[in-house]
Structure formats: structure tokens, C-alpha cells
Length: 386
Ligand code: PMP
Image (cartoon, rainbow, N blue to C red; front, top):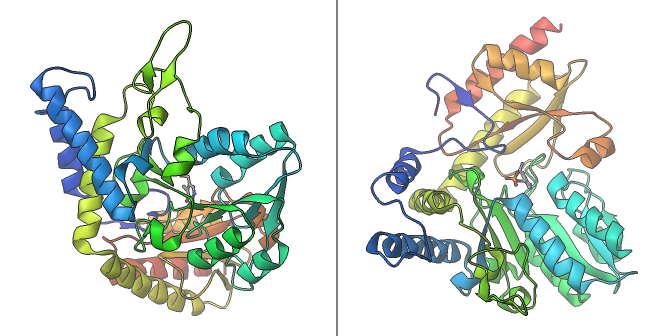
């Protein structure tokens, strides 16, 4: 965490606690070796550590088995994997996919690629007045042609928390599968995939205080087992010959090549760190900061606030007559780091009728002092732009 900075961009990527940095250093230093192949002790030990991390992930998200947890590069790869291996094999021309207006591009574009290739249609669930996914609208618009619903568990723009269990019930009543994009959720609220009753869940390690380049796709065992591989290569096979190759069962089937071994160790440390603090405590901490930030912003009458009052750790806003990039630049001069832009959610920006928002997002390391620095920065913006 950079000293003297109010880092308010955890929704983009979280700063790393020392325990994660130490786990990565140790992984490359005293214990490093490949996994799943070596006959020597060091590789066997690393394999145990790699698979222990998978068990830790399973426990963290309430998976029935570690074998339902596939290590991927991040949420983006997880969604693309489901699109290319599940949707391409399970959907047919005329089927439809249901998304929402607030999805991140990584939960839109992979489905558009499938739709184009398969003759599949896409429908979009509108938002409520406070920019959450409108589940009443979802219930009204879902039809038997919808075979998949893919929704953000927490919006990266508005911080709105989805009633995921209700979304799953609506989807399942109509025979559709539900994929949840948990990128912003896993570091902010407790997740239990079995209680949520979703079918696929994806998240990235780097937003959970872990390393970049590692993430998780969780899928119900029977769905993963029916899916063909994503990529071919080493480690994903059962037996290879030029006549016929057979594949390993999940999760190995979806982990071709030497994996991001040390990234997995870092993710394990990150989950221990987050669980050590407790997601209940993290959520309460971030909610207090969100309330304070929204309260401070309400003090400026040129400010428009987006998202529900009870958003999870994220506040998006605009200041009349000021481009969000200028807000970001002026805050930066006061060592306050926020994000300004479309947040990879251009359809949402179009619906809001704006090109961009400014976004402050909180993490475990933020304090009320950071919100005060943020408010001083906003005050300066409004003074400069008069
Ligand atoms: N979904 C959401 C809601 C996100 O916030 C992000 C990252 N901004 C992603 C998906 C994509 O994550 P990654 O770039 O780590 O794959």
C-alpha cells in the first residue's frame, strides 16, 4: 500500500498485503518446482501446495468439491471458457442469452462471440431507478428460449448487490442456467455457491488481494464433466496417441500447460488473509466508508450519485460540467487515487446518458481519513471549476 496515498481504486485491482507478497516470494524462492509431473520431493510438495490451494478455494466459496474449481487467468478467461466450452456445445440457433444492462464488457463480449457464431440471440435486463439489476423485469422477460443468464453479483460501477438466489430461482424455473460474475463480490461479501444455487461462478485473484494472472471458474460437477476442453496441451490429457487422445476429468481437463503455480499460492494466502479478517467485518467496514463518501458527495449540489445507498464498497458519481478524467487528475494531485472512465461498461454509460463516471472504491486498508482526503479533493474540483 503506497504510504501517504488514499488508494480508492480497489475495484480495479487490490493492493497486496504482506502475507501475499511473502507467499509469492517463498513460492519462487525456497519451494519452487513444477506441479503434477516431477518424481522428486520438491515437485511433489509443490503439487500438494497447489492442490491445497484448490481445496482452500472450494471451502472459501462453498463448493461441493475442489474438482469443481478450475484455475484460470481471471474472470475474463473463466467467462470465455464457459462461453466456448459450455455455450457452444449446449446452445443452438434460436436459443437466447439473458444479460443485464450493467455488465462488464467481459460478461458481454464472450456471449456476443457465441451469439454470432451460433445464431443465438441476446436480451438485456433493464435496471431499477437506483441502478441495480431489475429482477422483476427479469422474471417478466425470461422465456423458454433463454438457456443462460449471466449477471454480475456486484456491479463494478454502481456497487449494487444482486439478489443472486432470487436470480437463480427465476432462471431455474425457466430451465436456464445462471452464471455469476463474482469479480467484485468475493472480496466484499461472503459467497456460498451452493446456497446461491448458481451454475457457474467466476472471479479474479487480483481483486481479492491476490496476484494478477490467476482466477477461478467454479462450475457444477455435472456441467464441467459434460464440457469439452478449452485448450489442448500438457496436463489436460488422459492418454495421447495420433489415433485418439482422451482427456483428463475436470478440473485438469481445463488447465492445459504449466499453470500459474505461484499465483495459486498467492491466491491461497489472499483467501486466508480475507477470511482472517472476515467478510462480515470487511463488508461492515466498506459500507461505513461508502456511507461517509456518499454523505460527503451530497454536500456538493453539482454532484450526481449513481447506484443504491447500500452498495458494496463502490461509489460512482459525476460533477456537473467537469469531465471525470479532470476529477481524477485533480484528486491525484492530492494523492487520492480514483478511477475515471466507462469502467468497461459502455452500455451502462449509454443508458445513464454519460460517457464516463468517477468511481471511488474501497478496500480493507481504507480509513475514514481516506474519505476526508477524497472529500477535500472534491471540494478543490468544485472550486477550480467554479
Ligand atoms: N467483471 C467485473 C464486474 C469486473 O469488475 C472485472 C474487472 N474490472 C471483470 C469482470 C474482469 O476481470 P479481469 O480483468 O480480472 O478478468
